[in-house]
Image (cartoon, rainbow, N blue to C red; front, side, top):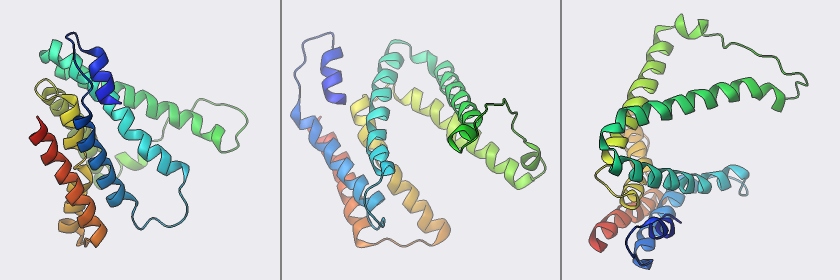
Length: 198
């Protein structure tokens, strides 16, 4: 989908390149093997949403690439807008979630932050997650998209499960199985193939 959109949005005549689809497909298969192997039961709506997520991210990356190539100095405002959208969506989900659980009347609520503010560990975790792994990461991502094409960045970002698994092995002593090595090989192979095809 990202390749088709890239061709349609191009200002110069560009051909649809089937070779660019192969690394993306290889990366998706690798992620599926790493993420879904060992999941018990039949496929669920969550599995479908997991496969829809890369499409949404890919479309967002294409938009970000276009914006950052025209305005490379806009990384900080773009990141701030993304954070604002996440905050508003989270607050909306908080307000609407009682309706999904059988409450018939809507009542505006203000979140109770007292338990978080009274726990230094919880407050530290939330500050780290919000500032380092979200705000800082979005800012760096915006800067990178001024220099890296969205299709290449999407493939590079499929390594996220590998990085998470690596940290899990280091911090928690988790082990890798055959499927993890197989999925990791496909993901790394997709990254290498994308570079070789360029």
